[in-house]
Image 1 (tube, rainbow, N blue to C red):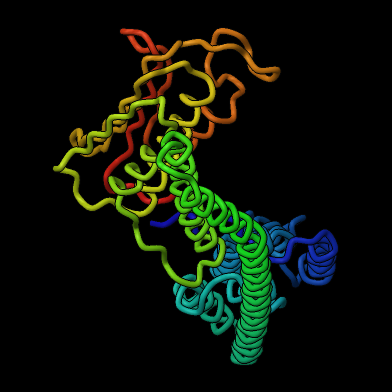
Image 2 (image 1 turned 180 degrees about the vertical axis):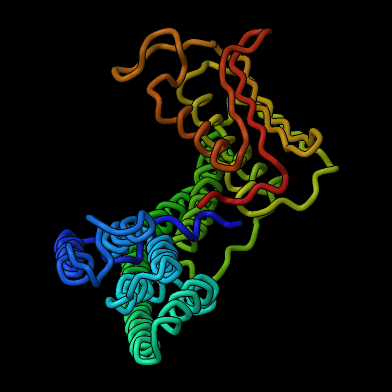
Length: 389
């Protein structure tokens, strides 16, 4: 048996004024029909069953909003007990009718029918044993109560559906406003940053072409500026695609993206890149996360370490893809004003950002001094990870 159907129902109106009205109606009913009288059921004289029925009727009317099904069954049982005791019934079982209203209001029609059929038939049978007039009046009273409760339930469902519609409409408007704002931000970034980077790349290319062979080092540096600028334009396009969300981004190739990063390093820093050939196609969230982690790691190598060599290793380990960046520089470089001494990149934003990116996909990222000297960053991300909401 599902005991939850007998408990309080949140759909029942329980504001204090409705509860007070129920208590008042119960008091009036007690005064009229279960008072100290030789004819009506009374709590002060008569058989014990009749006295108990009088109390149950009062409690059923006063508490019908807290336990409608219990009030219905209890009041119908009280009516039947009074009839079996041979006492006259003059209240037409108003308590069961009022409880029936709340049952119909707070339950679906099938559940209300399951809960109400036995107690209502019992109450009507008790009234039929009294006389035909009591049966007719009782049937009309219970029928009206059922219709009133069902109508209240219909109004409540309609109001809930309207609120849900308004909430969905408001959410759609918010999403539309957010999409418009993101599109505006994408346009601003494209017009401002994209133009500036394009001009830088163009001037670097023009300067490189104007130099002779005697300036080979300068030409290589300018070529690196061009490569980094073009990579930045590609990153900008991907970021703008995330802001726009009009089209799903195509997953870039991780090996090609890392080769572009390594190619943009300063000439004095030798870089080795090794990518496992057994890697399956990776989703866009995995590629972007690993790319950003390697990018931040190489940036830290250039900014904080006097390294001559850096190695980037990408390999598959079980269901994860592991990326390791190791350099042979100092594990602790000179601190910046916002950086505690003794810990490279300890300002927090870089390392914390790498850890957050990996954790967002269910992975991990660790950074610290390497056993053989230098600095080591290792990140692991599930192969099938998807971006977290």
